[in-house]
Picture 1 (cartoon, rainbow, N blue to C red):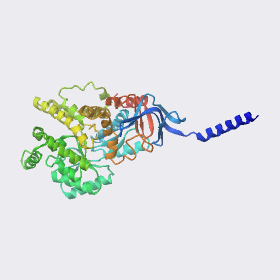
Picture 2: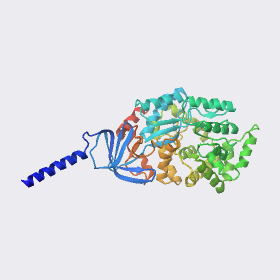
Picture 3: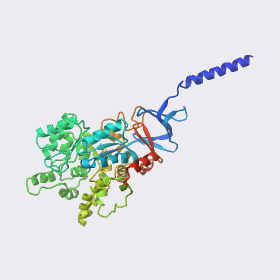
Length: 479
């Protein structure tokens, strides 16, 4: 009898303990990814057999799997898969005027289908549409990446790109910045087609006083060091970093300034051979150290440099992704293509030399502490730089240039979040962070090309399995 009472007591105690351990009501998550290996992009470490829970667009938990039961509206099998933060493309363009609004919108699908959950629009003439897309995507009415935008570019009088805000005087700069602030842009993009060196530096200074980030191209009539000290937050492409690596930078800058008063002013491409011939490791070390000190980032855009330098010899007519690029955007490719095919053999050879030199700068900047941001420069007029896929190819080239796969992933995740000032809520996989995630079937730390092996994308807390992504692509395929 005593034994039966003891057994009954133990059974009741076990039942009560089990009830205390289990919640009285099983929480239903929006998304559960179970038995997955989480990639920590900050440390480069792997966390195997994890369960990631998502609700209301946020990561709720990252915990060891097999401890509890989970209910979800969307259950994603992570077994044998690797989870990284959604990728960031830190240099894209939405542009081409009203007739290309619908064509540009299709790129939102291409970004998402290739694992890009955030993009930085680097200036164009479709700002009202970009703002509308943002609202619709945040409201769940449209699928696509988060967008940070500069709105219209700032440039000089008779600017090259339509829709640019043209400035020359301090008053015009103030007016342009007022306009951008009314548009609620995320940063200021400065272009170099006609802007004077003085207006360029004054734009940086005025934006800095307003707490606005600045980035962009740079006229060769100023030095990168001047811009960095004024507060330039990032330099796009490597032409301007490269000029600062010349041992004769001051002389070349003075030559450009003096030429502006003549009928034949010197531009970037006219000066590049002299910059190449006067490259100085000591000068490179100085500018990289200065950029690191002021936290000035670099966006190498290696993929577009490589693609454009190889235009005369490569046939893109059979590219599979052309089927998803609107014919109106494909028509904008002809200008660069025609220009490339008119290049002399000497010009083509120099482009290849320059491309190799640009590659060599990337690991040096990384080692010096310069923030590296991954950007593709995809968009209308940039021939055969396909939204989404081009960012994947950029990561592959960053590794070929000398970065580790972990560093390349940082350039396309946490570095972008830090640059835009939102690393507290996105860019890594942790509780409380935005649920923008990329599930891969192979380890990207072993081979960065594995970012192409997509099993699912989570955007704003909604999971898109590979089949759903394929259906989305099918919907925008050219008929």
